[in-house]
Length: 85
Image (tube, rainbow, N blue to C red):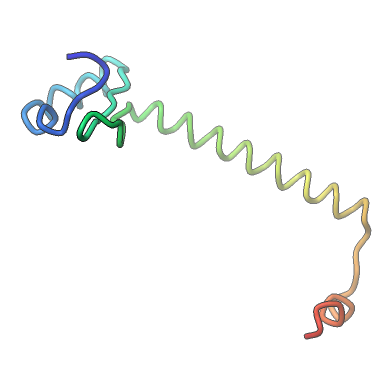
């Protein structure tokens, strides 16, 4: 079995595929009708992906704060007026 597994194969070999991902650190792509649709990866990979997403979110938040500081701030009342609220 290579890196891509069909829906039929996954039904027959789920425990094996989980072990390959969990202990062998393999990334197993699940396919339906020959098209990749999902993946089974180790928890370590998921945690790494989440950490990367968190870092990107933090960088985006810092950039937004920096931009807001450069543009200055306005009062809540002024903001509502600008939006005709």
